[in-house]
Amino acid sequence: MTPAIDAAKKRKIAFTVHQYSHDPTSDAYGREAAEKLGVDEARVFKTLVVQLDGGSLAVGVIPVSSMLSMKQIAKAAGAKKAAMADKALVERVTGYVLGGVSPLGQKKRLATVIDTSAGDFPTIFVSAGRRGLSLELAAADLVLLTGGCLAAIRQEAD
Image (cartoon, rainbow, N blue to C red):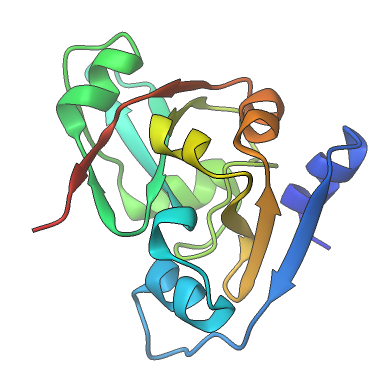
């Protein structure tokens, strides 16, 4: 059980937990999840924390096959600029280790922006709060649980 799973259970949201054997030598967490779960990378979303120009933090949830557009997430979060947040800060604020950061059940609730492509699928996969553990749920439920919004915040990886 993780805080992410607890958050979904508490709100009585329909979800499925998927577990797989995480390779400790891999740092391509999302791609590893897609491969081991046998799911298209476009349906597996990673959770990235950014620091906005005012100093506040925000969460971007994008497909693992994409990169986060700093310009787009800043705009969606009502800021001028965004940069990836410091790893130690991310772990301290979310309560999760990198590679297992979930958009749900974070220690401190952060403004959350989910890429619009999440709506292209009946369900998407996000981290359930631990490496090797994913949560499958509807994008609309993820928006509801996080109090977030949908916006185009991804750019295709080179």
